[in-house]
Picture 1 (cartoon, rainbow, N blue to C red):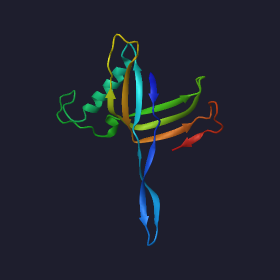
Picture 2 (cartoon, rainbow, N blue to C red; picture 1 turned 60 degrees about the vertical axis):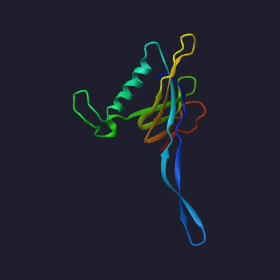
Picture 3 (cartoon, rainbow, N blue to C red; picture 1 turned 30 degrees about the vertical axis):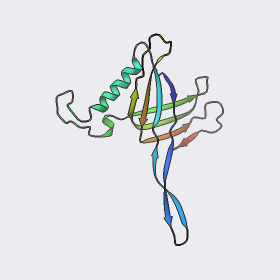
Picture 4 (tube, rainbow, N blue to C red; picture 1 turned 120 degrees about the vertical axis):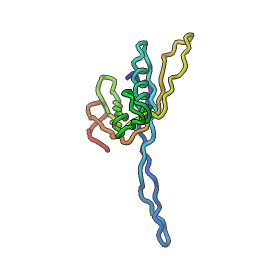
Length: 152
C-alpha cells in the first residue's frame, strides 16, 4: 500500500563456541530476524494513516480497558494483534520476480513525520516492524529468474 521504501529481512545466527581440549569449534545457535523499515506515502484520503493508526490502537489495547468495558483484558495470543506482510519485487511489467512472506508482525515504532504546507513533498509514515519469521519465495515468472522455489 503506497510503499516507497522497504528493507528486506535479515537473518542473524548466534555463534556458539564448543571448547575442546586444544581447539574451538563453532555451531549456529538461536537465530533472530532484524526489524524491517517501511516508508509509505499517505494520500489525500488518509488511507495509509488510517490503517497504521488502527494497528497501533490494536497493539495499545493489549492491557487496559477494552471497548466492551472489561478491565485488564489482555490479548490471549499474538494473533490478536499481530499481522502478516507480503513484499513483492516486480519486474516492471506486472510480473513478480520474488516475494517475501513475513509472519507475526507488529509495529515497533511509527513516525508520522511533519507537515509543511509550503512544500511539495508527499506525506510519509516511516515504521519499524518486528516479526517472527520470513520466507523468501522466487516465483520464476519474472525476468532474470531461471528456477523457481522456496527458501525457508
